[in-house]
Amino acid sequence: MSQFDIRRVGGRIGAEVVGVDLRNLSTTEFEEIHTALLEHKALAFRGQTLTDADQLAFASRFGPLTGAHPTVPSVEGQPQVLPVDSEEGTRANHWHTDVTFIRTPPKASTLRSLVVPPYGGNTLIASSAAAYADLPADLREFADRLWAVHTNDYDYVRPSSVAPDKAEEYRQVFISTKWQTAHPVVRVHPESGERCLYIGGFAQKIIGLSTPESRAILDILQAYVTRPENVLRWQWAPGDLVLFDNRITQHYAPDDYGDLPRRLHRVTVAGDAPVGVSGRESYLIEGDDASHYTPAVVAA
Image (tube, rainbow, N blue to C red):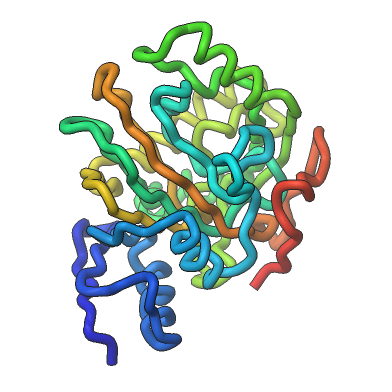
């Protein structure tokens, strides 16, 4: 048995793993962490003080890695590490699941803190499985049949504390290649079999419905995801690492720390095409297969 503890930090999502060094995990310890991730959806590790190489090595144990991002540049010399830097316009303070505008979004995301503000700058992570379970039966059955178009071509970044010209520059890079992908509104998790609401900020329209109708339905479903009981709030300290299952969560970084610096590094694990309740896979509407960013991964 491992010598570390897994301590639940929320009733429905999140656990802190205490007493572990992510640079030196045995196979058994890694399997315990993997099992805990499926159960808790998000895991936090305090005081790891990892390097980029350490973060890459840990993330790669979950599978092949993606590039840093389909359009946004990586950390210099590290093509698989995305800088999340408040001073560069990346204050994406809205609920989203990473990169759902492509057909095969990431399986998991790791975030490592480098510079954190003395207040604010937390990361919120929500369980979209708990949200689905909360739906009334009739609404759940309705959602099971819906498909949504996810796209990166909309007002993704609306920072209040970043110069408008820098924010617009970031946005133009973000949408330099445009994608539209159809995903099931209810996704079946490929490992646990759980159903979850697979929506978030990139989901902009319900297939077959008008834009106003789509917005109303998405807003109703999204309200279940962001119920306080479904949300973990992580208060960063330097050296922390947070791991979350990108297939069954959403996350949000509130822009509540003024002009203070906040810098994280993100590394993501390649994922498969989401599958809906009917067994149908997601499909591309506009854009390429993003093979420059992510390897093709077969569903588990």
